[in-house]
Image (cartoon, rainbow, N blue to C red; front, top):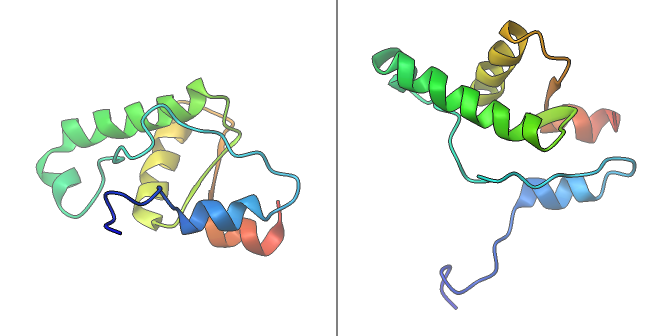
Length: 102
């Protein structure tokens, strides 16, 4: 079976679903990039910021209390945006959640 025919699968999502006491939310644009990767954020700063703000807005729209992931640069980018917006949403690396269970 090709990957195109297989059902979507996310290892991080599967791990997080094993943690008791947390509720995962689905985003409208689940696979969208935060815009920070590599030198893109330097070469295309305005686009990078807009992409990050859109990504954060998707989380806020769905009532997220935490944003998590496995890429530290993405998490730092979104945390900076949240900080500048004076948001109370927290950013946690997936390892922090799996280790502490919030």
